[in-house]
Amino acid sequence: CLTEHDFGQGRAWYVASDAEERLLSDLAGLIAAQCGIEPPLAVPEGVEVTRRVKDGREVLFVISWLDKPAAVDLGSVRCTDLLSGRELSGSVELAPGDSLILQSVR
Image 1 (cartoon, rainbow, N blue to C red):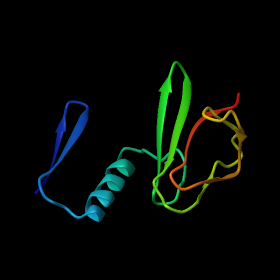
Image 2 (cartoon, rainbow, N blue to C red):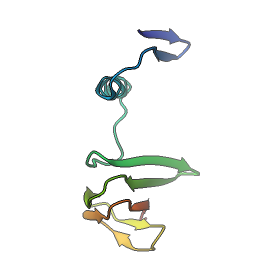
Image 3 (cartoon, rainbow, N blue to C red):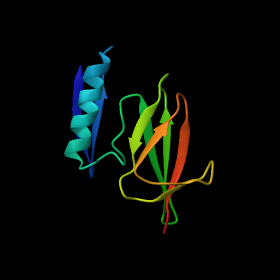
Image 4 (cartoon, one colour):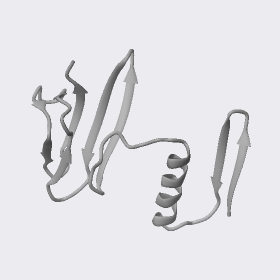
């Protein structure tokens, strides 16, 4: 069972099933697209990115859940990894299970 309900200025979705992962992933992608939400970084499957903003500062948490190296493309944006202090840009390789906490260099 899948229901959708508009409420106030928002919308609620309820999934009442033991759905396959692909259904949930596709549904999340559909909802995100409808809301204009885009991922902060394009990353391979198995790499998680979350974005936090506080007092105008944006920080990205990048975590590899993979058992092999993974490449993450930061593009031309220069970032500081707050864990190591390294300045990064372009393609960055994450070791298996590695993580980064990135803040844009101003």
